[in-house]
Image: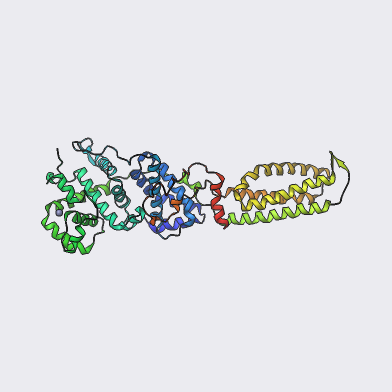
Length: 187
Length: 272
Ligand SMILES: [Zn+2]
């Protein structure tokens, strides 16, 4: 993902270039959607993504490319998700937290698909701060510095949140079961 | 080891301001700090200065060595997981994209000029008929009929000038103005054919037509559904984590068609 190309498209879109606006959306929409799927939930991600772009276009006039446009956009998406969660006044997404005794979903379906599902459930069960840091850096591929800008926190915080998210996932997924001792769960 | 002990060692329990930072200065790391380094290493964000301490710790701590392998597996799994494709939103969001500014600005300036021309025409016709008296027509003196016409012309001129400035009102002007132009056009054609009017008098109506066209351009190129710039959306990304409910009312759902006030905001910024 080329940040410079995205930022150029945003600047051209700011000055009324509709084709550039379309390009800006095309280049970023998968990441915006993916972030929103994990920060909010799958069912509303498309609507929230639309709201993200509408907000972004509404404030594009003031965009001065001080930060890359992608970072700027993802920060808006993050606020859209936060507003959504506040509006709905509901718990953060917490779909079927993987509990002790739950046989991992790897048993039900073989291969990558099952692993992918188990991973997604485990990611969605992370505490919100860690999930955000993990999704930004691992699924969207942002550097720690960029993720810190999007999340509005120091880089060191991103660093430790990612590490803790990893620890949670290691525990939840029981990855590398060759060493049962390290991933053992209490009865 | 017990799970609780493991969680404590991972730093899962307790605050992030852990004492591990102090330990690093002594060249040693606790498990939580070591795993944070291992995690950063997986992302290419490791601190080279801590590398020796990490290696020292790994040499003495099989649990962290194993954690590194597991974390690598999870990381690989994450990065190779097939990404579900989201919907294509281009068509849905493009109407909210900023409109070309220069063309719109030019149309607004031209609309002011047309409005002024219309006012001048109205004023001239007013002066032209001043002092005339004459035949009654349908209960009104011809002079009064001319006054009515002049009043119309002046009003439309004023509407063009005002609409060029307060662009949100332009759209409301269009239906009445359009109907007026159609009727006037038909009647002018009939009058021309019957020789009841001179062509140059009819030509002055072209100003109206031009004003209508410009008003159409200005109102059509305005922000379609002006997402009212939510205060938070305008803030710099560095502005911090999500605000408390007290400081930030939820942004209005901008999918809805917004009222004229919100629509006008970008236009006013433009005019400024
Ligand atoms: Zn250790």
